Amino acid sequence: MPESQPPYARRIGKWMTLAAWIIALGLLTLFFADRLDKQRNPNQNVYSRVDTGGVPEVVLKRNRFGHYITSGEVNGRPVEFLLDTGASDVAIPAQLAAALGLQQGAPMQYQTANGMVTAYLTRLDSVAIGPIVLRDVTASINPGMGDMEILLGMSVLKRIEFTQRGDTLILRPYE
Image 1 (tube, rainbow, N blue to C red):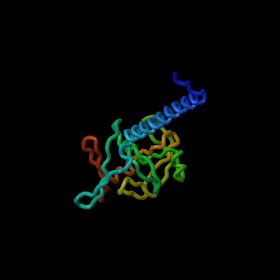
Image 2: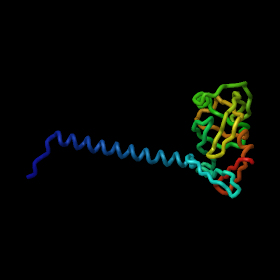
Image 3: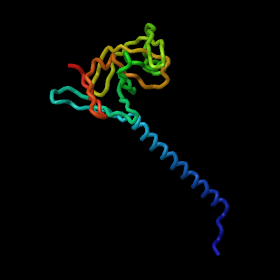
Image 4: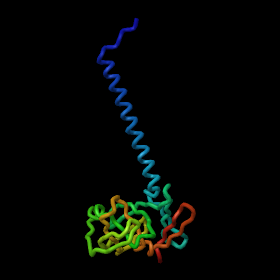
């Protein structure tokens, strides 16, 4: 007849099983969170190349929602951009603007998809997407934006040539 296990051994076994499940769920959560983030921003690591004329190009992939989101920099600090041809200028959420140390300027009225909003003018020393760096960029600080994503509007996009081919967007600075 087999000997029965002491009660402490059964308790340890239950705790070890629970710990294994918690670790497995934690690892699965990390794995799927990373996959979802890559689906939202497939351009976390900006892919760039140099064309035959020596001009740098940035190649962006469209995300699963049909948007172009990419990692970049404002004044040398890492940020995420959502390319938005409908935005007049670069629109920065107020919370992110404070973290970047941006100063609020004059109030301006903007017509958005959510109606009229008051935002505050500011200037960016630099905006960079990979090797493409633009200096002295007009932007606005928008207190109504809740996320930490910057809308990369026409104050930048008018200074960049872009070509869309299928699910790919190619950005090139004007010479």
